Length: 126
Image (cartoon, rainbow, N blue to C red; front, side, top):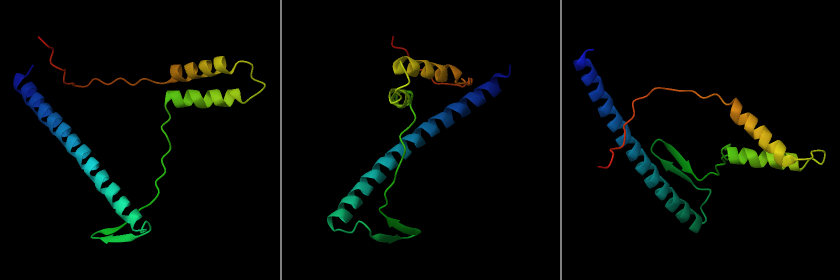
């Protein structure tokens, strides 16, 4: 095994892992700051009854717009939805069991993908 090549690649991986982590933290902070400014702009426009205002900026325009997002499809939400579906059917005798059986079937059919990745381990306390 070429120790120099291994050391070079480990150093490169650590450098870019640290860089990615730092950039992720910066992006998270930038989104928090942006959201804070957005909330203030919304408050100011609302208090001056200007919620439909179009604001000209370099590179485009800004306007408050309603943004709709569908809730994520979690196992809990799926379970509640399936149970609600079965419970509203008078011909179904045991909606709880049928819900559990269907959810177990869905869980068992999921494909698990495995990747081998380098991962930093947390230091163990001495």
